[in-house]
Length: 140
Image 1 (cartoon, one colour):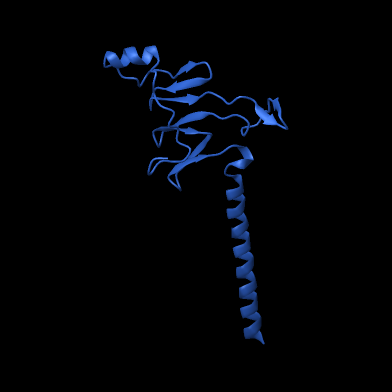
Image 2 (image 1 turned 120 degrees about the horizontal axis):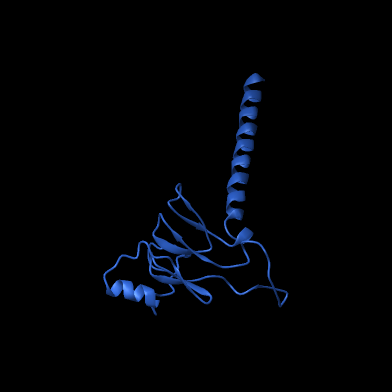
């Protein structure tokens, strides 16, 4: 990826332009009010001017295509209002980290969040043991 960009940022290109977008641009009209253009299995984002996948083909499980009804199954692009670009498998924009959070179901960000919570509990447990040991050593 380009320097400073998220690895999930879509760089699929903008050509060919949809006819409605091409006409609006040739007339110097704003695209602010224009809706995204869907053609087949892809969508053209009129805010950042890139093609993005509307959806993935069905998930493959044990060599057999199956339609599964959970977020990790299908790939999609979404335009982030804060960052101003389309992000693959967009979940949300995190104000704390200042970037988009994206992932595919449990394979995405959940393990990191679980790890952070586990480290918090481990830190609290270690602190309690240390304080307990200090109190007991001073009491003796």
